[in-house]
Length: 391
Ligand code: FAD
Ligand code: UDP
Image 1 (cartoon, rainbow, N blue to C red):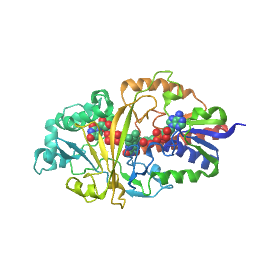
Image 2: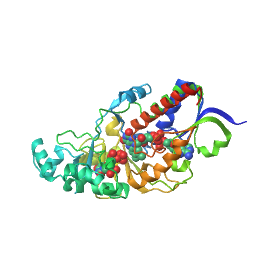
Image 3: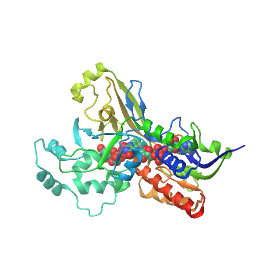
Image 4: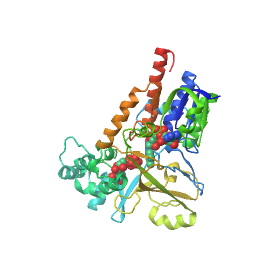
């Protein structure tokens, strides 16, 4: 006897679980979520290191949003711990205030300066490009060549194995450039971490679905496809995989993570560098644009405020993607957009499959944008059900 569910959901990340919560609670649908990893939460999953420190094992996940709707929705499943995400950049043997702001300029000229002075310097140095078309142009049109070469060109080459000229302007355009002393890494109005971690947020999302939801971990959906009967599928995996690479493989970047546990003795010695007892580095995140094989080191304890004597640093190494590795980043560029467009055409013709999330729509989306997309996709499905009495 096959298992019967109204909806089969592939992937238990933000996209899959938000869809599951909406479908079970609002429409009373039964859902099966199939997840190939051994945990829910997708890349936003968090856990404790061997030293007992809360970490983000798939790279730092700084929640931020400008949307009250998304914040209010998620606030049903978590309380928040507001955070100032602080990042520095390490190059030429020193730590720089980052993203570029007045403090960075003062470090550059080695004296105090005013905002007016910095604005005048930028006016003199920036390259006049009214409509920046790629990631090089978007930075040089704001800062000029010097700061671009110092902080962006090398980092981008390392992270993407592509020149900034060959990436959409939106990639480096994510990073703010400011003329005042505001050194927050992100622009969005609301910046916070789930107070008790993402695991608790995801657990609460699942709890809210009640017994209409079943989750199958450690399972690729293809292994169970023939044993499950369903009316509709929500797919949050890679869209090229879904279509058996019919139009070729989409390019992705992968990553490798190195976890480093530090005990009080070592942290004591590192105080000279971190400037803060109990910490290994001076800020939550340090970017390494020009030296080393890694792009950044993240010490999450700066953001969580966890009361522990130990600390754990996650070091992030960009890696070529190959089948079997995690496709962490879609690559926003003209050539990949052309391949994706062909898959998007196929997806548009599907009546019984909804494509949702970062991999299924091949978009360099943050968590809030994926939650927003899932809420919208759900609304579309609900409207369709109302119109046709069934999805
Ligand atoms: P995912 O979280 O990728 O979930 C998809 C799930 O589907 C995965 O668990 C996968 O195992 C599963 N799956 C795929 N194929 C199959 C299959 N065939 N069968 C079964 N299961 C399958 N966003 C922010 O807002 N702030 C940040 O600071 C931030 N930092 C990031 C840092 C890194 C290194 C990365 C990679 C991403 C970051 N993001 C950040 C983006 C964030 O991870 C995504 O926006 C969000 O997690 C996407 O959710 P999703 O459910 O669409 O995809
Ligand atoms: N970037 C850079 N130098 C930095 C930080 C970022 O050149 O110090 C560029 C780089 O191309 C990177 C992009 O800006 O991939 C977006 O950075 P972000 O920190 O938002 O990346 P994510 O957290 O998504 O990996």
